[in-house]
Image 1 (cartoon, one colour):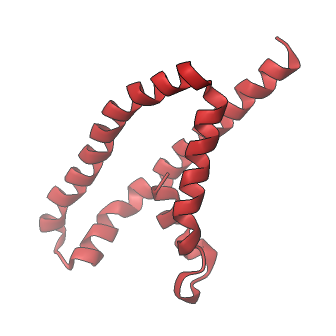
Image 2: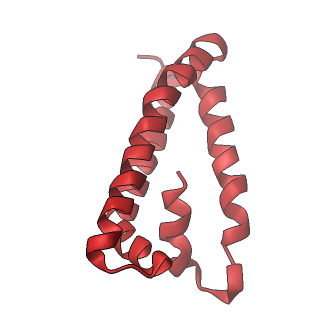
Length: 113
């Protein structure tokens, strides 16, 4: 495998790894987050947690073929770079929101990935 190809594969794997880490970090806190934000008892928050997780899977189901088509047309690297840049731009305002330390805001930022 050439060095350029090896670097491309490493870039894609690093991006996928960050995405998996983001889902792994946000998944355990979603029930508590829904309960706190909705002011709901745990038994009433459970359907909302299910709806959030189902909506994520629903969007992934329809977005994956579209992103695949874009990556076939323009290449994987530009599509991943543009997607990562858009997530960065979306997360940037939350980084120092209300004087909170960054470690407290990371679950919010990573959940947007």
